[in-house]
Image 1 (cartoon, rainbow, N blue to C red):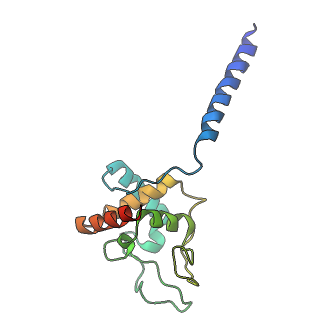
Image 2: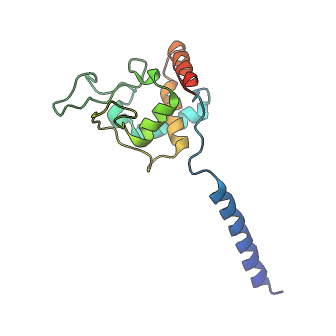
Length: 157
């Protein structure tokens, strides 16, 4: 057989194998039951993603916007902090992932009729990036808040 034919056949076989693996993988990787901040590399990656996508609203130090509990003239609330002073640690991980992916959805992750400036990141961030951001955020919490949030997350599963 001619070498060109063999190379084309080999390339086609490799392409078919890659396509078979690609198309049999789930579209959305499973989010772990509890996102732990114990992986330093994941936390470091999360900080980069946070700085690029979240810090402009939620603060470079997770501090949120000023007066985050007081409605703005448009009726919306400013971005809350994600450090221990906020309420992020009161929510299970799956809800936090859902909020980052889809924004605050009235009737699902927010009260009916609620309007928010929180954008949806489903088209911009991979699940792995969202998990890394949450690991970074959690890395700032004291152990008692982290344990409370872990319990909230695992009770929901």
